[in-house]
Length: 303
Image 1 (cartoon, helix red, strand yellow):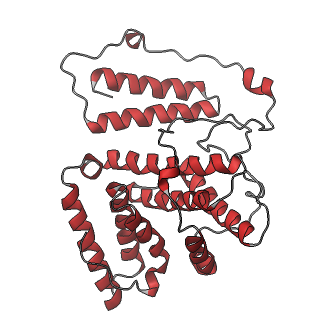
Image 2: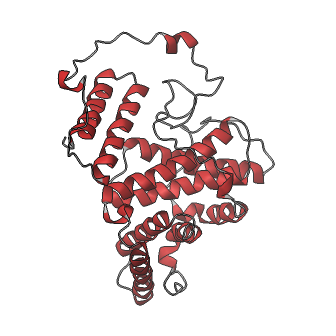
Image 3: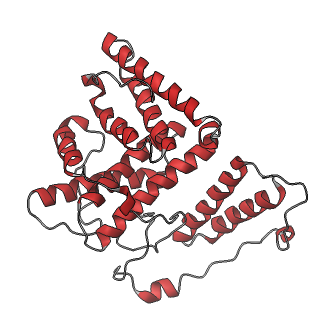
């Protein structure tokens, strides 16, 4: 890594959490570290790119980015934007799911607080690829709220409630850095013992919950035992007309000579994910449409 950064200017105080996350991931996951720094760089440019102290800081941060980019070489997660997007998103959602599962089980501790909070920071970093989906925007807001809520409960000797109890009515502005700065510093210190090795390593993409479960809509988590959803509501969904399927896909086989690029694979993953999200809402048409797109891409190399 390039030379250490100078002291962070007051104008960039909100970015210190993202830069700390980058530093924590330099060895653990350099791709995640790179995009956290890139997010800080892009956001810092928007905040203040003219004052001498900010220009000096951004210049050093740019040096760090260039050095790391060279170290990563031809890593596809850096050279292929869509591959990088999938990498960061999967990592963020894995952390979110670990924390959400701990929350559902009533296990409130520093690791899960840190995981919720870090997931929200990584979803910030995901914006370097464009605007967040409504799903990820909800995940970010919920994770940041949950981390703050559980931290404050434990600090005050109160027992947190699992799930999103009070979430919708909570007057919580995730962009209000000024009013929550002290709390965030306190939260960061309290969760400094976080050990990512405690997280399960499974790939959690595509996990769904049924409509009405106690987690927020679209939360990528397993169904808890007591969701408050009647079992027959899940076992007997509303009937829907099954959409027509392209007949050529029934016996689809990979065409000879077809070579799929990492970008093709990433796009196919996205289509499968969209299909899974559609099934959360029993939207069969969109689920079938996206699965067909994925199958066609995987067998022909074309969309």
